[in-house]
Length: 283
Image (cartoon, rainbow, N blue to C red):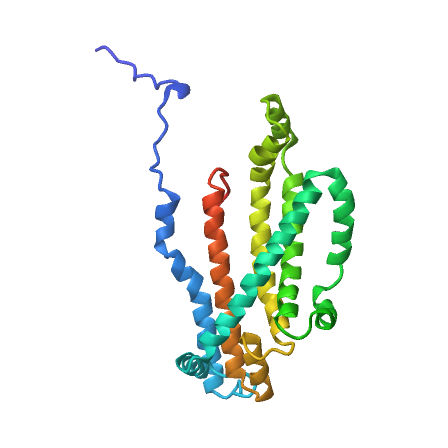
């Protein structure tokens, strides 16, 4: 009876690998919605805060409870006090932000695009930015009085330094090979600035704008606590005199919400203007 040999196994290099189904990251992350992960910690902190207030561990004169703060916010909105103060503060931030952006970008262009401009402008700016800008409030009051001008000047000063540093770094961080390529293609000086240098500096400018917005709100807090008769800082000063921690927290929450809204606007603007730049979005 003939005996047949078992079939030979195919060489290892000709075997077909075992196929493993690939699950997209977006599907795997749907187990817990992202918005839920972002709100769970703040909600837990609010619950803990309310429990501590209700149990008496956190007295009202130290920090009002979330429930009291919510009722106070509703009262301030209903009688028009909070919307009026927000409008005044927004106007101050807008005027100071525009003036600071113009000054910071102009100085950064002069210093970043020219070695002569760098020698003339950069040492002065570096020296001035080392001075705490809050410390110049007395000088602004002496020079500009106690009206709106010192508050706007304080915001502009804080904004201008951040924009100057980031735009200047963005201009000087442009790849030299891109400049050489543009020159080889026949671009002149202004063509290089328009098509190579300024687009390359745009990511740094957007980062500087985000820092500037945060600094603008911070400067507003200091500015409105100097002889102001309206605005969010004025409300906080009044609340401090009467130990109204609920009003102080409401104003702080408004500052935080306005700051988040401004940051959202800048992020949206960044996505629109920097679509050409692929970036790492996390894993």
